[in-house]
Image (cartoon, rainbow, N blue to C red; front, side, top):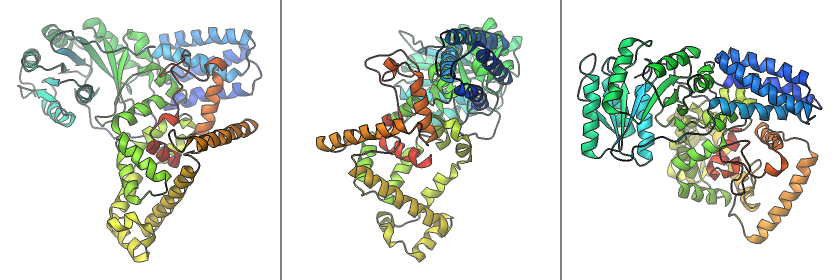
Length: 542
């Protein structure tokens, strides 16, 4: 199923942006309270209920969620617990995880032969593009994938799947031209036979949809289901539609059945009620989320991480995973060494910039940092084209100029500005920022790799220097304690979140969970776990 053309949304916010703001606002007044009272609980629950209803969350889900939060918050009030705001945030976080599905469910694969995944959903939900995203994701997991074009109803659906498949690097089975011609059940069956003959691991069947659930749609979906016996039937749900989409998914579940949900357009700016409602209404787990229009804007859905994003706790784990998946670790290490030794050049900077661009939207990266909601205006105002302008300026320089910016006189800068389509002021600004960053990196190298807000980089400096750095860090921590809170919104937010945990849990947490069960092995993910070049880029953008 294809999408209707729409404006690309590249922002760091999502369908949960407004809900996140409303929830955090409701917690703000509790921070001035000494203890939590039942009156405080009632008032906060009332505000949470209004925020959820305004976000178009299904009423049964709203009732169950607020009842659970109220009951637990009453218990905290009766215990005279301190830090009321933090207590309520912790409770809301736990209940959000439950609403979103709890533990992440793994995909089910067949023991022998090809595994068949069938995609279903309404027209415009984004099934065809999502088929390519899922195919690419599986290919990168080491699977041989075949996309089957069984949507023969929508105009140009077959051609669209062929284009998407080529971009994703996976094979497409499309024996029929589509546009109302051909038998979709026959296409699905022959596609499966082709997969068996050629040793394909996973078959993804793209099916037709309608503007609404009807008998013809159900009958066709049932026929395809019976013909290929899919291991997973994934219902693609447009996260921007709201409760209507959830009701549609319920009707499809009762008529055809499905094993999981894939949320599309989670990067949009609608109210987000569908995403919060679908698990509670259908009982089916959310398996994946599509977070943009690029084929790489696709990720496993983790309820704990999504709950953290909604409550402005960030999602550092996903950021780390994306960095590990898309960045060249050896190149990043080489660049880090040059930067800390003060030898960084604009040629190196250009290489770093190209590495960072592999991670996708800069706004999206910034949106995963804890405390991002407090910087929402700055993130929204960040111009993604600025990265392209910077790259154009550096590319307009000669190799000698990239290696030594000191030779950039007035005429050279004017030539670079003309060549890059920018102004001399833009060129001057870039050079000035680069020189400042280079100086900061050099000072970090002399200090053993310490970066403000990110701690120290492991493996830098000898044992004596590390011990000296440890003594300095201990003294710095003592100063921080006297100082109340950091002036950096993201860092301050991390300090507040750390305080939410019981003392014996502050050093460890289950992977992916902001409030997971303590373990000896798992350390709380932090910005320190990001590759050095990503940390430097994000630090410079905050």
